[in-house]
Image (cartoon, rainbow, N blue to C red; front, side):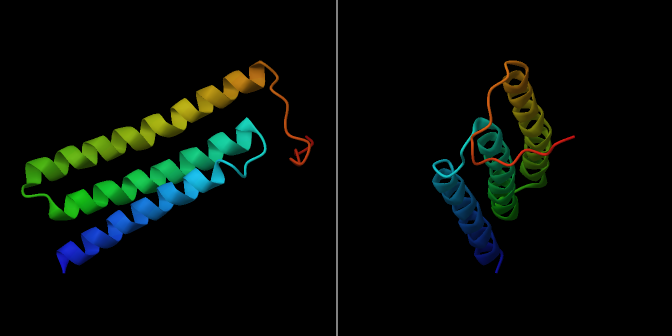
Length: 103
């Protein structure tokens, strides 16, 4: 039963990464692209680490996996934000079909 759940987690991770890869060709500008990739990577890595967590042999390995997941979930959004902020500072234009919020 545990192996089945782990395999479902790995399948969810694969689907998340596959949809992200296909979505790379659909996003019109770097802002949308980076946001979509960042969110999907966080979900995909979360599923993969959950799958490894379920089949890991010891609690020491499980704790290390949780630490890696926590670090990834902290670092991934922060680096995505910094890259997008750099694009904003450089005044990278939005694509014509992107609807920007007026504020």
